[in-house]
Length: 319
Ligand code: FES
Image 1 (cartoon, protein in one colour):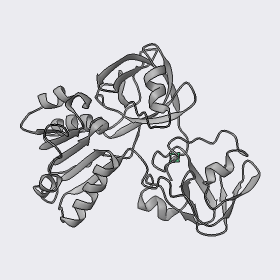
Image 2: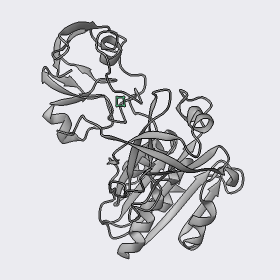
Image 3: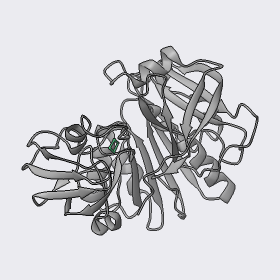
Image 4: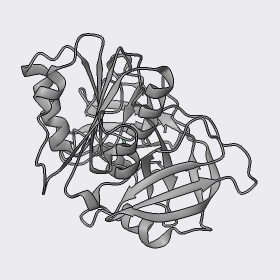
């Protein structure tokens, strides 16, 4: 079962600068200059903002350099306030609680890689490209964005090899031909993609309909199950808190329990970040998250209470 505990360290922001339209690059270091916990390409960190909001961001620095972490944060005007708070309230000198790196987007060995990044989805690709270079594995990058000004790290990724990097700005080149890009790959190759949901949905569809031989690995910005939390009512028991409540047809377990149980950790409320992962003591889970893998779902001993429900009438949770 994956751990439900998150360890936080207080790290200091030592650099914060705009690196593209609405994208700030922030560097975190230990105030004591201690080396930071190790991580692998594809990892993200959890950040507790001054207001208490929790957000997750992919690491884009060098995993072989333990002196700092770097993340890139896109200001999302239509978001739920986390990115705006980061842009407006976090600056050089800020001390921020940062969780240990976690990795749900592991770079598996392959004969060659096709990296596909949409917008700020470039961030997890940077350490992956470094790792591919270090292992001598051939790679290509397809990087799309609205405009070149909105695309972070553009010059540095092109400098990695213009023959291996294809840039598609919507206002100049238009959209990439993903089917052709993936169709060139043979068995043993792998596609790693991160970006907006429509792009990832298209890649997933093409991967199936075009019979692409390469494996497809994607990381979503938002949960696949966003909004789909409805179902039959059931009873949920929080054993350690000694309370029970009926979860209504259109509310989540998290929503139902929060007035009764203090300090339930949560962040995305869309089933993709893993923050609200809770151990299941009794009952059968209707998994609706995009965080657990198939084996973890089948085991049924843990669940994301922000979106997942119960297939029966009663769930007992370790809360
Ligand atoms: S709060 Fe992110 S998975 Fe539940």
